[in-house]
Length: 145
Image (cartoon, rainbow, N blue to C red; front, side, top):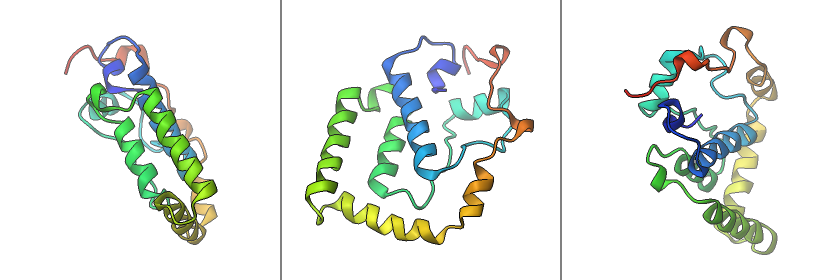
């Protein structure tokens, strides 16, 4: 959940962009993020102070940078949906039509790194930990820090 939402602000498209970054990171890393951290008021405070999930080393740098941009604490610094579309379309076209592009090179390199990472390690991290349920209860939402 975006930090501004945890502070009690209204949902906006920028909050959706933040969530897109979280989902993109989970999808690319094949891990449930923050699975071993208790989802309580302390996590809310940490997120509001800038804490973000780790990005797996087998995520291409260009994609990692986009994820980080989506997570920016300043909503004005996050990409818009239009900008996201343009970036992802450009990369998609480069992957299909240009084997010399930076995104193509990074994906190829990360696929090699990804093969070296144990699948069991990723499988264990993909399991839900019932002790750290990813539900933040309303009483933990902060209005101000």
